[in-house]
Image (tube, rainbow, N blue to C red; front, side, top):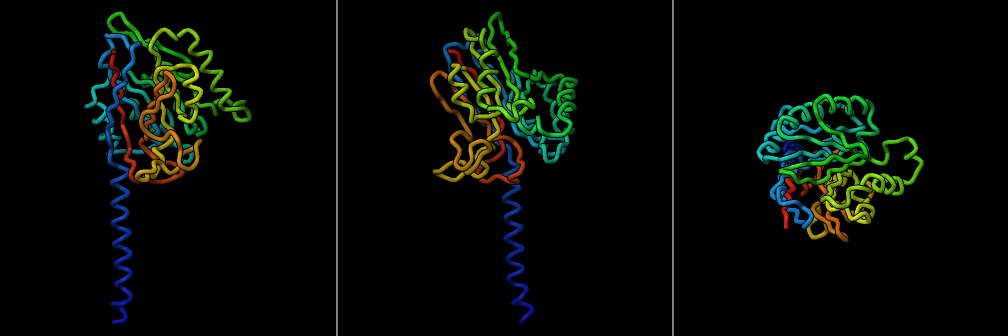
Length: 285
């Protein structure tokens, strides 16, 4: 009888641990595709229905062997372009092979663009990552713009480095440096519909001050734990109960789409906040 009394609570505890692990696996490995329509009078008619697949914050995570499930979902979305808004590797475990293998497959689906996140710039071997992306055919937008053309019409796609990229940024003001970078970047891009790839959503005030039409961002990991009726619990750069953690935000003439991301880092799991692929579909008015 004594043995049974001892075993019973142990079995209960082990069962609860097993169920909780199953729950966490489901929450952290179930990919969700979110479709968002972006309407703007500046979007040319030839870009009506143009599909941008947006992923972020991979942090070395794999969904199936060699990210097979992630690649299949992106391919099924039939993107015109694919954008990655930073933290494809993790500075605490900097394995670039996962990101490079994914990039190799993505460029076979559609033209692929990348901007750095704080983990990409702090991790050992970051230059190998950027060189690898270039070799794979990924376009890295380091404080520069490209023109996307279709049927004689065009839109502008710009990207900025994470503000921690340069050594002098480490002792400087991230917001002021971001502001000066964008100022020089979009000086001649105001007529086109312009899209900015920028890792940090907490800079939304700066992005909107330049009337950027659309910002695609990540970094917040969906708030890690999404509390019903309350929202995200915590995000880097914003702290507890962040203002910008998932979905679409609007200010002035600017829309910002924040991707919940795919992986985790220092905070090892997410709850009520499944990994996300975003399809941003442009609609001309």
